[in-house]
Length: 64
Image (tube, rainbow, N blue to C red; front, side, top):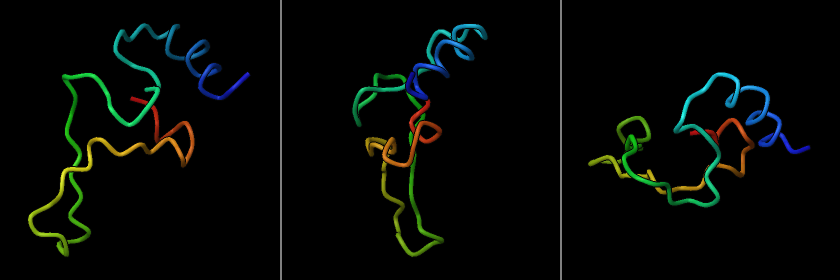
């Protein structure tokens, strides 16, 4: 069983949130919180990185 399936079955479904899960790709459905990157002030203005697929680092980064 994948980590995503295990977390979904054992944690998310039991806790009951309706809009929590693992997206299938870098785009996620609205409404969503936006994510901005400023790199400690080196990127000005901060860039919107809300569509980046962070699942490459594992399930913790992919959970929304």
